[in-house]
Length: 628
Ligand code: 3PY
Ligand code: ZN
Image 1: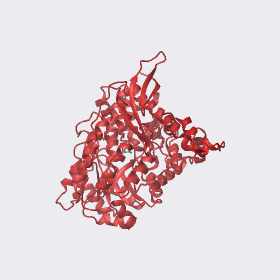
Image 2 (image 1 turned 90 degrees about the horizontal axis):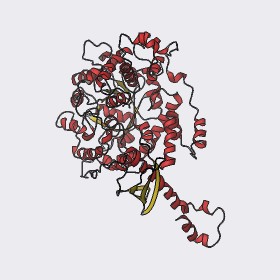
Image 3 (image 1 turned 180 degrees about the vertical axis):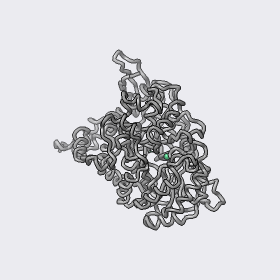
Image 4 (image 1 turned 45 degrees about the vertical axis):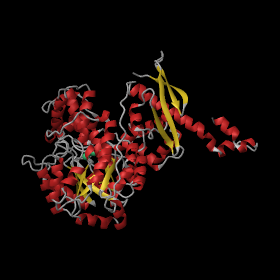
């Protein structure tokens, strides 16, 4: 290997070899380097085989469907148009557009809601070329932000920034949209202003065209800050109002049409380019959508963009009624990634509007082709599917957001509440009343979810929680909420609850970001260089660390221990290899490794097993600790 390469190098043979020789000839290290990388990948796969898949025979999957490429009518891509016209003119065109416009959420909310946000960049890049070809007529692809950011580092062991860059490269002509949780960025707590500023700037520079911004309590004060930060990038800003309750129910007087119209006016005043309605739990019923959109169209000038979930099964109807009332843009997902807790089916809505006034004039052929790719792909992710297989109209009663609905049961199970999910859901409703009937979406939904589980575990009720609570310490999320650390809910936090939760601690009523000290990016840089061994940290790495210090540290350690695992195919990444099975990995352009699992040894006294692989035809043993 390495030594032979050095010995055969003509310069080395000629004898004019200074001590700098190896420094100046790094290619000679390539072989050792790739062996080293190969060994790390073997360790990763070995660990998946032994500890994740517990040596069970893994499923094998059919080859993924490859979309057929057929000639279609040429259309200008939304981003091409945006760049050609400039933002102001582009927005005017949207306002004047008769056809219904779409955002495809397949690459973000759809998999966040259906398969725990697990879609890997590898699989998205695989379909990127066909996406670019067939989806030019989308207003945008929602493909970043929300939970995708930390899940990429935390569970997929890949960089969310790389995802953004690579998709941007492969899909230059369609607008990219991200979900920004206002001062919570893509996290679960308020961050200092300079972190939000840096994060938004880096996102814009990396390829985001549309920022959808929401606050988990609909607190406009918090949103104003993010709106003005995002406006500075010159990108499209969509401030979104979170929808809850039922505007048609005369017995509900908190979240009414007037409430939303007033909020929309405030957001318009704050400088948003588009108003979003973010119906994260799928509570906006078809006829309510009609009334709400009509009122908004009458009262604000900017385009209206509707996001909903299909949890109840009414999703398509809601989009069609919204379309009837004049909504400008709606969110939907490719059909194999749509429905239930995800968005309504894009394919169905396109077909449903054919030959009507708002016919989107989209050739559905390509959308059906893309859908088939995700249909096959989704099978590989089966272990992340929830056990919800039908729509649930009871969501109207519980008001639980899509992503949380699929997550709450496993969360309750893991906390010892197996078989008590019905009670947890009932308590979700009660907990919502206890905290003051609030908007429930990340992170305020966590406040309600954590409290529901806490109430179930401790047998608390609406009537006894204040009394019993005196001797209990409440979940951190509820403490933060009561302190004002995620912002102010309409009507304030109920005083008796605040008192029993805070136990004498002070609450704030101003924007948390205005109190939090600026993040010290120089100190982060020092840590990345000195402790993590990153030679030249990028600004994106610095802001990632600022958002998620521990998650980022762990990710870097993972890369050091196991190499970059993002090029592994997903079946191997999630399930490893069976004995006798092999896979190919491209570790860099043109450099492939073939990995075959040959044997799994019995565990020794110290719990170590020796796994034998073939790496490019050479036998290689790796020792893996069996932690089962
Ligand atoms: C997120 O914040 O990630 C959401 O999708 C909320 O609905
Ligand atoms: Zn959503």
